Structures are given as C-alpha cells and as structure tokens.
Amino acid sequence: MEEQVLRAGEAVLIRRKQSRKRRENAVSNGKETSRNTNWFQTMLSFPPAAPLTSLQKFTAWSAFVMYLIPGLAGGVFPQILNFLFFNMEGSGRDLDYMRICCMALAQIGFWYIVNGRSCPRVEGNGAILGTVPERVFFISGALIWMYLQSLIPFSFAIAVTVLDSTLAIVTFIIWYQNTPGASLLQCLKEIVAVMLPVPFTPMRNLSSSCSQITGYGKLAVSLIFTFRTDIAQDVLGEAPCGEFSKGLISVYFMTNTAIGWLEVIGSGNGNDASPIAAVFYRLAWNVPMFTVMYYFGRIEQGFAAAVVVMEAIAGVIVTMCLGKDDLSSKKTN
Image (cartoon, rainbow, N blue to C red; front, top):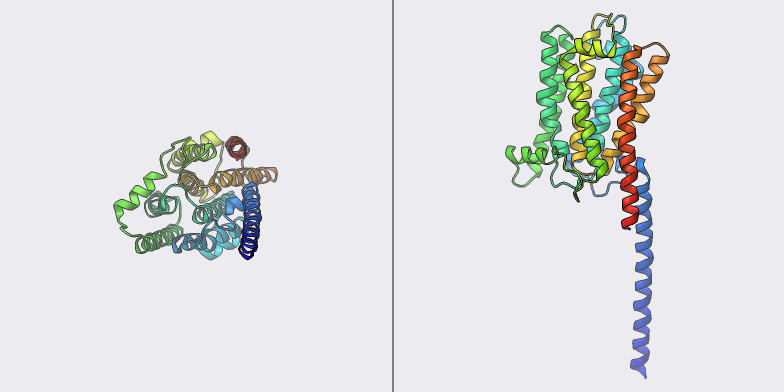
C-alpha cells in the first residue's frame, strides 16, 4: 500500500515537472517568435542570440564611436565637422556633398554594428574580417589616389587613412589572439566563405542571397564612379561648382563601394540581420534623405532621382524576399 502511494506521488511530481517544462518551452518559443517577427530587433540583434565575443564587441563599439556618431553629426552639421576635422574651406555644393558623405560614413558604421552583433550561420568571422582589407587597402588606396589627383586635401586623406588602417589592424590582432590556429590563410578563407553568392542552402535563405547580389551591384557601380567622376557627372547630371566638389563626389562613391562590400559579406554569412539592414538603410534612410535634399534644392535632380530610384528598387526586391522567407518559415513550423 505504501509503495503504491509513493509511486503515485512520484508520478504526480513527474507530471508536474513535465507540465512546467512545457510551459517554459512555450514561453521561450513565444519570445523567439516575437523576436523573429520584430525586424528592427532582429536587425540590431537585440538581445544578441549568443554572448558577444571580444571581436564583436570591439567592432560594434568602435563603429558606434568612430563612424556612426561622427557621421550623423557631420550630416546634420557639416560646417562644424569641416572646421574641426577636415580644414576644407568649401564653397558652392561642397557642404551639401560633404553632408551626404558624412551620412554615408554613418551608414558604414551602421553596417559594422549590424555585422558585428549578428550571429553568423557560416562558420568563422568572415563578415568582420572582410573589413580589414577593405579599410587597409581599398579605402587607404583610394584616398591616396584622390590626394595625388588634387581632389582632396592632405589633412582629410591622412586622417581617414590612419583611422581606418588602425582600426583594421586592431581588428585583425583581436581575431588572431582569440582564434585557435589563426593565420593569414585562415583569415582569407573565412572572408572568401562569405563572398560567394550561393543561394538556397541551409546556410543562406533567399533574402540573404538577394541582399548579397544587390550589394555586389552597388559595389560595382560605385567603384566605377569613385575613380571616374567624369562618368558620374554625365550619368547623374551633376554640375560641381565648389573647390572640392569633384573630390567629395569621389569620396561619396568610395564610401558607397564600402557599403556595398559590407552588404555582400554581411549577407554572405547567412545572418538574419543583414537583409533587414539592406532594406532599412535604403528605404528608411537614403530614399528620404535624397528626396528631402532635392526638395530644398540641396542636390541636383538627376543625382537625387538616380539614387532614389535605384535604392527603392533594390529595397523593394529584398523586402519581397524577406516576406517569402517569412512565409516559408511559418509553413515549416
């Protein structure tokens, strides 16, 4: 009799534990579903899916302090940023072009934060390591070329080159010290792993592949316009009339080349944040900014129209892919 009572009591305890566990799982699943349907939180990885590594923390915080905040400040008050950092006595369109350059710098910081905080599906840190050659070789090389062409002053070229190269080297050192078997070859392998657009794999969904392709498109066009500002002026209908207008146009497309690259490597690691970020910075940032600047006569009609149309098309395409991924996920669940 006593044994039966004990067994019955144990059965009750087991059922209670199972019931409590089911409730906890239901709550957890509910939170996860809510997080996945909240695109803004998913984009910023808030809260992060896993504890951030020292490399991720450095990438996110350095981007916030050195790129995002100065970029936003320069976008709102280009005169102050010009006076404090660049020593460029602008005239004509110079301050307007400086404004869009600063906002592009803020977008670079935004992408560093997104890629730094996100949880990659592709093994490694390719989305972060990819910023090392971008900053050390491309940005520095492009700025030196612009200075030699007398497009920008030496103070601007050296300031950005030193800043970007220093942050890139520190990024590589942190990765090297915290990664077993780290080497230059391993670094290159991790970067290449997120460069190739391989759609419809468990590592990448449709929106990631689509975002990566649009990133390659932006990279290619902006790269051409960076070094051939004459083509950019003919295509976009720009009429530079300031001392540094031509150089600032080149700087703007240089930063857009970097943004395209960050979209490529961010989407290439299969995280859920990058496709959403690709939509956000286009439809909620670039399109309104260029529309308002054109409305108030701060930028040429052809330039504004080209940017707004291309960004809107790319943003809508990635949005449709995100919606399709959401529907596929719901059907699977």
